[in-house]
Image 1: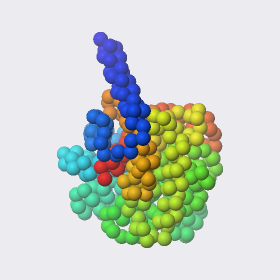
Image 2: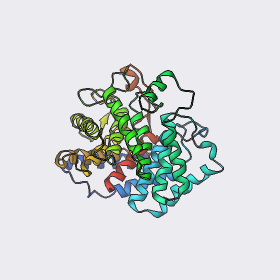
Image 3: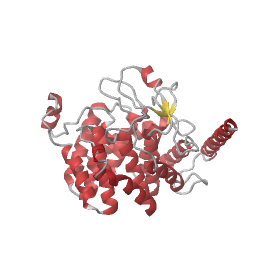
Image 4: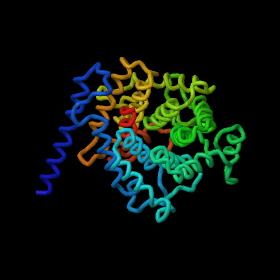
Length: 379
């Protein structure tokens, strides 16, 4: 009996996925980012994933024990759930997500990250979003602490970190493409919350360093200076980071034009590698690589944001963005979990290493970008 139920659920999920992929094929040339087939709208999908997150335990990479601190995939998902709740006007969901945070001021205070590293500092974006939502100063104080400490020496940095700091960059700089979401998001959130230009200027200066160091002539990015592979999610962090930054960076900032140029170059190349089902691959330019959803979600977010802000031609990129959204949500199963998500991935100068990464289900690396897309579609 139990086996039959499992089979029935599997068949229903498969049918849903095939149906959504069918929409992608039928809607060829459709650039509409407002009207969606039933069950595919950003309000419906965002609600499912945000509610799923709100009731989930703290994320620890599928280990059986709780984390010792809030990890970056949870911070990124929490941020996405909060922006979705605010933009969709869902007050009940806003309350749930706020109440999830409250124990971090008392009984769960030990989970607030203390390590000065980009992967932990991005946590600050969450209380800053809560401040934007509630105007409660306790959230602003906590969020600003993370943004401010990112540009301060602790006394334990390496010589390389001190070198970057002396040049005006954060000592957390390491020139991995992942950083350009982690650093950018907390700094631009601090700018949104306070209006203080120093935060936007920091993020922009840092972004240009990464553009100059890692972007290749084709617009894509190596994972690191010593790893010549166009890893999907890594490039996704860059795409999402530039999109977040450009959506709030004053146009008179001296680095604005350089960042926009890097963004536009990347978007043009991504168009060439989008698969028929709307997704992008684990290694973007490798036809033998598999369709990967966290990178797809981040690229979709970047294109949606570009179309919504008028940076990208809607007749071209609106089509790609719609196709990406419909393709992406076809990978959501009946438990509101995204499939085909590359597991946490270190850098390695080895193509097979990326091809062989485990394909997770419900990993917050992949849940987060779907929520970002839902928010972007509502803006």
